[in-house]
Image (cartoon, rainbow, N blue to C red; front, top):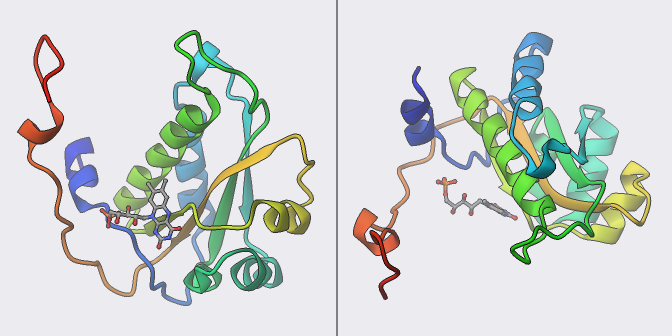
Length: 171
Ligand SMILES: Cc1cc2nc3c(=O)[nH]c(=O)nc-3n(C[C@H](O)[C@H](O)[C@H](O)COP(=O)(O)O)c2cc1C
C-alpha cells in the first residue's frame, strides 16, 4: 500500500472487534512514531501503550466521555515531556511533534488492517492520575487502536482551492 492510499483509507474507527493486536503489528506502528520528525529532533514525548483491560475500561469510563475507546484492545496516551518549549515562530512544539508521530501511527495501522481514532476529549487531570503521569507533563491526545468492525464511510473534505494559495496569502 502506498502512502496516499493509506491516507485515503484512514477513517476514525469507533467500533472495534474483540480481538487483540498482534505484537509485531503494534511494534510496526510504534516504530512509525519513533521515526517521526520533531522540532530539534528532540522526540520529547512518551507514548504510554495501555493494553491492560482494567486500565482501558477505567480510562474509558472515568477520563473521557468517549466510552467506545474501552472496547479498543490498545489505547495510546501521547504525553509531552517538554510542553513549555516554544519554537522561534511563537508556536509550542509539543502538539506539532506529537501530531506527526500519532499520524504516522494511524497510517501504518491502516496498512496493518487496523483502525484508530484520535481522542482529544479527555480529562487531563484524571488521565494523569490513572496512568501515573507527573503534573509537569501534558497529555496531548489519546489514540485508540484495534480491528474495525466496519470501515466508516468517506468524510467530506474541503476542495484543494479552499485550503491552498500560491505565492501569496489570499482570503
Ligand atoms: C486532534 C483530534 C482530536 C479528535 N478528538 C476526537 C474525540 O475526542 N472523539 C472522537 O470521536 N473523534 C475525535 N477526533 C476524530 C475526528 O472527529 C475525525 O478525524 C474527523 O471527523 C474526520 O473524520 P475521519 O477521521 O474519519 O476522516 C479527533 C481528531 C483529531 C485530529
